[in-house]
Length: 336
Ligand code: ADP
Ligand code: MG
Image 1 (cartoon, rainbow, N blue to C red):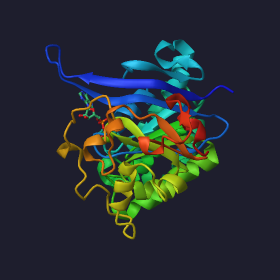
Image 2: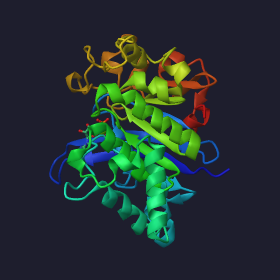
Image 3: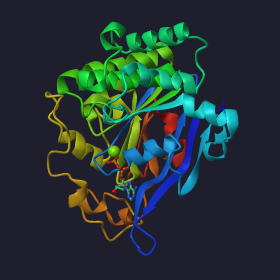
């Protein structure tokens, strides 16, 4: 069966300028498969700088991979033309961190929502346009009469982010990329907005890639999780496996540092900070080598993925007795 979307061994390297030798491997040999028949919510989790936004930009086709390929319905997204390109643009939507970003202060909400309908010719009449807008606003938990006619400054952050989700929903997307969608929203509203995303997956069959630095929300909303560290997948699997029984020493460190009873606290407030880390002498090996409490000599080589449970794999030599999985097949074992 053909995948809706597939990232195959995608690497993104940013060079810092023409003359500079400096470059950042923002994402390293990343593979992902998304199935159309089984829409799901998958979390991509990682601290700041782990490559999450780079992944979002790649999925949306905003940037090109340095190596590897990205397919939508079996075709390389950077070779799409005409109608196929338009379909891809419509079916893969995004909600970003900043709920203000897409609002022009001089236009009302109505304008923001009408533009995509016109652009993609989704309605034949004014009445149909209005019906679609009302339906999308209602689907994200807003009352159209409270929202329409308003300017951005007359709305709360939570309302703005819901409108962003409604805007994406209008286009009947198959995939929604949500990059830290609630991190700038009041803590008290977060759970509620995430619930809304969750119901879109169920009611509209949208697959959601939920990108976050917050493992507690990941556990609540997603079925599966991929843990990134400095551009590399450390561990992946079902949330019940990875979050409840983390196996990779890096994931264990992250989970242990979460004050679980307080779901509004963020992780990474302990001593784990990407900026503090040494780049490490062993660029070719495990990215976590220099900080890993269980590092071994062999970790100077790049660890492959090993399957630990039916729905869990980690890139760590501690599991070298286990079955190896090719990176491009790793997401096959994520639960839907
Ligand atoms: P995250 O969203 O997880 O914080 P990013 O994808 O934004 O991570 O960044 C991953 C790495 O790539 C970081 O080291 C960041 O500094 C670097 N990076 C991101 N965008 C660019 C860019 N346009 N040019 C150069 N480096 C970048
Ligand atoms: Mg980011």
